Image 1 (cartoon, one colour):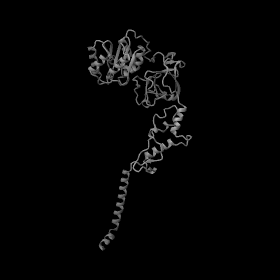
Image 2 (image 1 turned 60 degrees about the vertical axis):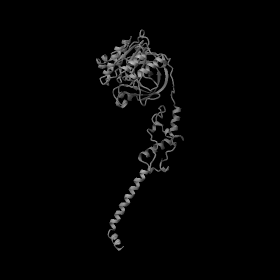
Image 3 (image 1 turned 90 degrees about the vertical axis):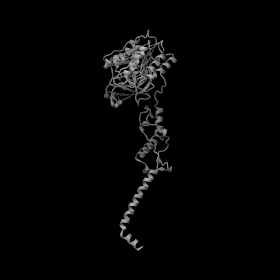
Image 4 (image 1 turned 120 degrees about the vertical axis):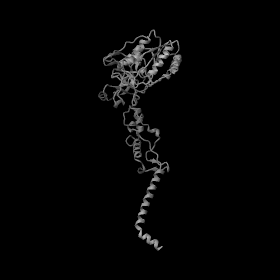
Length: 427
């Protein structure tokens, strides 16, 4: 015992230091274990608070953040899923504190007459609800005049759609995230012509805004409901236009084309002799629809961006069931990928040997498969007496000025030429 006490006395400082270090290590281990054991449940994260309240009444208030779907009734704290208790502010992470503050602000009723900001947004939306139109009358007659900078029509004679939010954009990275000027329809954007609108308005729909006839050729992630984005040549012009509200009318007059420096509007021509015409195509045909409609007003055109050849069979079957399949059928498929000879033959057989069929081949230096596609089409033409080739490859490869920056889609003159070539082949 005497030796033990002597040992402690001689090594007291060392023993004390070891004890302190051990206590610190134990405290650290306890903290780590506790943190690993504690599981917290994040409160709902707000993307943008002003989407629910502070923005204009005519904007879609719940387009960007629907906090109600979270089922939140209180933002007093964050629940610890292990114990079920409410954690105090000091136990929250920085992100949880931000989320908690956002929800508390959202549910705060002190500045909105006893209503939460979500409730206030709904009441504002009801009070200022604009133009909840499900369908529009397609029987209006519109007086039209053709000008050098666009197509004009009388507002008074149009079908009124209501007041819309009007904004401006251009083909720049800030506005579009790209600079090639190609719209969602596949057509190039043009000032005094192109607008982006909600998807309930099909591509090609024409509207009168401030006396000018515009064509829906584009879409936009923020362009929903009664909101239209008008295309301008420069970003400065789009900024000057700013954000406005204006009366919008559905244009129901004859199909129009916007004049350019090198082309003039094409006079409508009769489709007599061709019988009924059906056209099935991809984005190139989407872009050429307006020009082709001006040449063949009663053509039944079914075109979609990104369409593969394999979709053609079902489209033909649907047209046959509806009784809309024409005597003359134009196929413009192959831009988006190759297809087998057997698949092409099935499409031809489904159309029928009693129909005149015209198949447009393809051209695009950036398309690895265009030569394969054109070879398949040529083989199908040689084996079917009722199928005729429309040689866009020869026309396009010798007129590169008709193409936009991607070398596949076309300029305004390019789509005009494309449509005219098809018309000349089938008339």
